[in-house]
Each structure stands twice: as C-alpha cells, then as structure tokens.
Image (tube, rainbow, N blue to C red; front, side):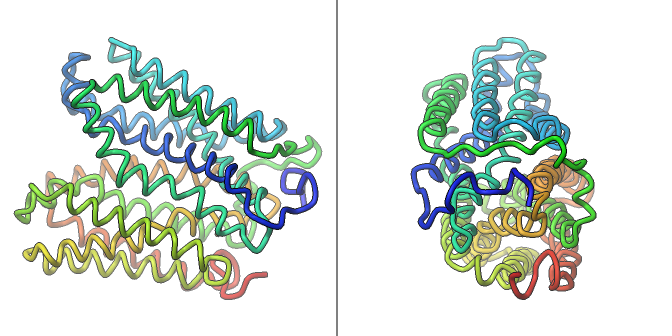
Amino acid sequence: MSTIERPTAVEPRTLPVPALLALATAVFVTALTETLPAGVLPAMSADLGVSESAMGQSVTVYAIGTAATAIPLTSATAGWRRKRLLVAAMAGFAVANTVTALSGQYALTMAARFAAGVAAGLAWALLAGFARRLAPRHLQGKAIAIVMTGIPVALSLGVPAGTFLGRVLGWWVVFLLMTALAVIVVGWIAATVADAPGQRAEGRTPVLRALSVPGVVPVLFVTLVLVLAHTVLYAYVAPFLDGVGMGGSTDVVLLVFGAASLLSIWITGAWINRRLRALTIAAVLLVAVAAAALALLSGSPAVVCAAAALWGLGWGGAPTLLQTAAGQAGGEQADAVQAMLVTLWNAAMAAGGVVGGILLDRYGAGSFPWTVLALLLPVLAVVTAARTHGFPARRG
C-alpha cells in the first residue's frame, strides 16, 4: 500500500461526522455551481449581452475545465499533502466564482467558469479518497454516501432555490453566496478534516497505469455510459415534459426525482459495504424501468411522476456506488482512478448535452427514453460480467 492510502494514525472506529459534512458541503457547492447558470440563464445573458444559447455554454465550459484537467493536475500534485491541496482547490474555486459574479464581460466570465471547473475537478478527485481515509474500513461506503449526498441536494433543492434567489436578488448575488459558502467550507475543512501525506516520489506511478489494475476499466466504462444516459434525459427533461403536456409540472417532477434520490442515498449508505454489486445492478434496472415507462406510458401524469421516482431511486446512489467501486478496484492507485472517474463523469455530462441536443433537433424529445434504454444495455452487461473485479460478488 502506498503512502497516500496508509492511515496517518490509528484507524478511526466511528464516523467523523463534522469532517464528512464539510466534504459533503464542498460537493454541494461545486455541483450546484456547475448547473446554476441554467436557472438564471435569461438574466445572465441579458447582463452580458449575449444570446441564451451562448450563455448556456457556461455550463459546458465548466464541465470541460473539470474533464480536461483532473488527471494531469492529480498527477502533478500527487506529492502535496492532501488537506493543503483540498483547501487550495476550494480557495481557487471561491476566487473563480467571485470573478464570475463580478465580471461584466462574456469572455472573462467564460474564463472564470473554466477556472472554477478546474478547481472543482481537482477537489472532486480528492473528496472520495478523503472520505475513505477518514472512516473505518467497515464504514467507508457509508462515509462516501454522506459526502455524495451533496449531489442530489444540490440538484433537487439547490438549483430551484438558486433560481428563486437569482430572480429576486440578481444572478450575481447567488454566485457571491456560493463564494461565501466556499469560504466557509475552506475554514470548515481546515478545522475538522485530518491531514494525510502525499505520495512519495519513488512510490508514484503514471495515472493512466491504473487502467491495468483489474476491475478499473469496467467501473470507468459504467461511469461513462451511465452518466451519459442520465444526462441525455435530465438535461432536457423540460422539453420532454413539455412534449407530453406536462410543461407546467417540471418543478414537481424534479422534486419527486430529488426526494427519491435522497432516499436512494440513505439506502445505499446502509447497504453498500455488503451489497455494492446488487445495489449497482438494482440502480441500473430502476433507471431502465423508469425509461421504459416514459417511453411507453408518458401520456399519464401519474406514470410520469412514478417514473421520476424510480429514476431518482436508481440514480441517487449512483455517485456513491461508482466512487466506492472505483476506490476498491483501484487499491493503491485509488486517487488516480478517482481522477479518471471525475474526468469521464464530466466528459459524459458535456457529451450528454450535445447528444441530447442532436436527438431533440432530429427526432424530438420522445427519443430520449429510448436512447437511455439503449445505453443501459451495455452498462448492465458490464456490471453483470465484472463479478470478480470491479463489481465483485464478494468483497475481498
């Protein structure tokens, strides 16, 4: 085991809840900031003097910043002490977010969004590893589940709240609030999260060499295709609902999805250490059933809401399942695998927006559920086949 994975002291016996909540808040603020422009797009585009489609690329450029730099930055900073690196990443995120709030120029805003994505990508490559190191072995899955709660909370509650505040106070005020929260997180991490050393130079291996570790490639493949399938539908859920006569119920459907996602997080945290494989298979099947319902029975509002609940139940725990599977498969190369997972995750989000747009233009919103089903077939096949490494039937 390399230095980066070795506990700095006696392994803890209980979960350090304050530290894990600090990490969860870091996940929340970075996940929310990525998608926040979608809720305040008209105001941002009007103030910066560009079209809404041009302003919408502020979400894409954030994802590109994360995807393009997570692996090289993780490799370049492998020798840094982990806590110092995480604090530096969140501080850089706060600075970039402040520039976004105060900028009056489109080019500067896009540069700031790219920089925020870079900082967020570096932080994301560290967060799951921190959660694992802070917890005893039998509670590592629950620790990651607590940290990853920040994602569904950001999507189900944060984005609607940010949209409302942006309409009442101004979009730039919301971004400044995100900066303030990031600064609080920096202090919270400094006060509660235990430090860990970086990797010794002689113990480092190239990040991409982790691909040779058994189980890593299946986990990364599942991450890429599952996130792509989810994003194709989630990014265009409003036009899909509009196409089935439920355009005025988008907020209700997303609320159902978000509530089910939170329940999924709780279930995943309770069972992940004993049932990672079963939970992953169940997650894929639940999303598939939801997609099938939306494809065949979307004329019924009740069915659409039920499908949203199944979708949330399947998707909510997915970040925790994939982060945990990556960490277990990676072993000594866990941080390198996490960096690749972050890269593929954000690449899939960016690709989902592009693919969804093409599908919408050429085939209409009704093609989204069928596309999701087609993408989930290889995902299910790979999870099922990776029973020895990646998604093992029995933990080693």
